[in-house]
Structures are given as C-alpha cells and as structure tokens.
Amino acid sequence: MAQHLSRVALLVRDYDTAIAWYVDKLGFELLEDQPQGHKRWVVVSPRGAGHCALVLAQPSTAEQAAFIGHQAGGRVWLFLESDDFWRDYHAMQARGVHFCESPREEAYGTVVVFEDLYGNRWDLLQLKSA
Image 1 (tube, rainbow, N blue to C red):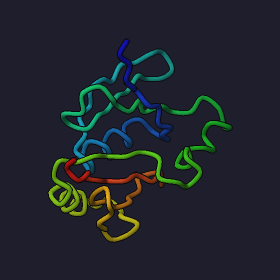
Image 2 (spheres, helix red, strand yellow; image 1 turned 30 degrees about the horizontal axis):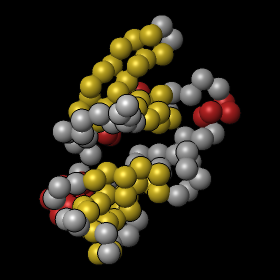
Image 3 (tube, rainbow, N blue to C red; image 1 turned 90 degrees about the vertical axis):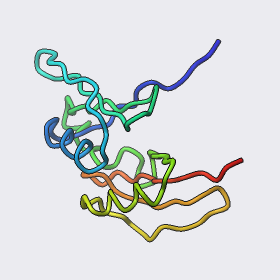
Image 4 (cartoon, one colour; image 1 turned 180 degrees about the vertical axis):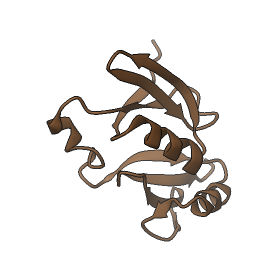
C-alpha cells in the first residue's frame, strides 16, 4: 500500500489576499477555487509539486482565527524544497518575501527561513545530492 500527504490546511484571513500572496510572491499555482456555500475550497501548490498542496481555509470560529500565523507555535512548519535554491531565493527576495535570516549551508543542504503573509515560518531549502 502506498500513501502520501495530499493536502495541508492553512488558516488565512482572506481567500483572495492569500491566493495573491502565494501565487505572486511564491510563484505557486492556483489549482482550485470553488464556492461551497458560505466558504470556498481553495488549493494552491508549488509548480511541479506533484501530490502535496495547501488548502487555504478561512476560520469558522474566533478560536480558529486566533491560530492564523501561529499554526506551529512559532516554529518552522512548512518546507519548500527547491531544485535551485539561489534562483528561488533571489526571485522571492525580488517579490518582497520576508526572510528571517541569511541563507546558510548545513550538512543536509542550503536553507533559509522565511515568513508567509501571516507570519507562519517556512524553510526554503535545497537538499544536497545523496
């Protein structure tokens, strides 16, 4: 039996603002945007990502809304793997993505932490070849 993660829900304040940020700043593709009564089914994904994508979800309660930007308690939570770190780093920098540090070389590859529009922390990384 084969399994894989297909979707990860990410709380957002506003669908259209979040779509614009992920598409314009990170270069993601908008895969789905379907009305579902009082909410929408919105899915974005890095280009060429294959299976895994983000479901952009507006909170249903004030309790859920309190977690926007804090879904991982301030830790890096999402990992955007690149086949060309420097290409993507410079493109994201030019588009105004906020980086929390300078890129660094680690034993596993090149990495830098950035924040999305709500403050969720991500790693942009390129793993070293095995």
